[in-house]
Image 1: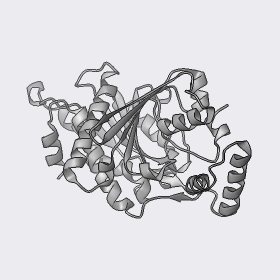
Image 2: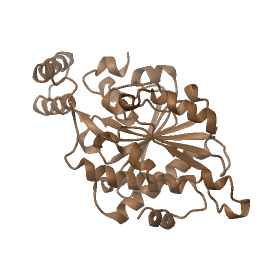
Image 3: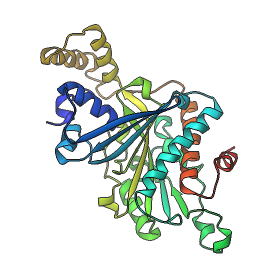
Image 4: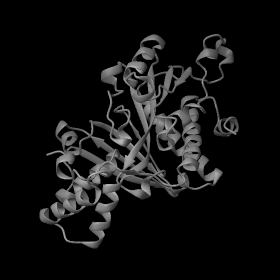
Length: 319
């Protein structure tokens, strides 16, 4: 039985949350899933490895490696703390890149998914604006002048409602023409916890489905669909209203069991119907939050992609 079948009223894009929910429901660990957590100062890193098709079906997530970085600094305004978290994220990204066994000069295409006209969904385009793109310079510069840079290009393909073209079709066309060694794709996600909105980054080697944060699943950007490895980077910027109501009811009624779960679902459906079944919620300060996270993520990506560039140089570039 899949996660969606057992806890259908709660949806999340974070593998760590899904694993916690399913493991909590079954009362034991999920077979075929490894999960462990470490802390670096105020930053918590949770690693989830989904190893088997059965575990994939139970969690509703593709088999692969998922890393979740949580830090309250991402929701703060402290510049130094944001840069420290960015360096932690950069180290995790380097691990993913090294797993592809590519050289430091292997080319990368950075894809910023999302709708730049909708603030909670504008993370991808905001990050792309700050990426250190070098492909156009790399091809003409002599080797001794490349200075530890990787050939990087970046694009924000927009959304289907603006372009009339599936994101996967746009990206596949670029991949076919540009032939990058790997992709790094950024998108906004949904969480089942209000505390994790804007304070969590998920990195995965499984690719991504554009629009997943608001439930509009499009054609996936994956190794299977594009023919090149894909690193997916996502930040939850929204949570479903039904999740908030569910948590509130759970606090009020500490009783468990299938009958109480069914009762909670009935109450949620009654409150949200008929017009707000798909209502999503985002923080009121989302515009500031998106800008800060975009800077931190872009800094992390620039550090990870260009081995010859220091963190100080990267953040000076982003000023």
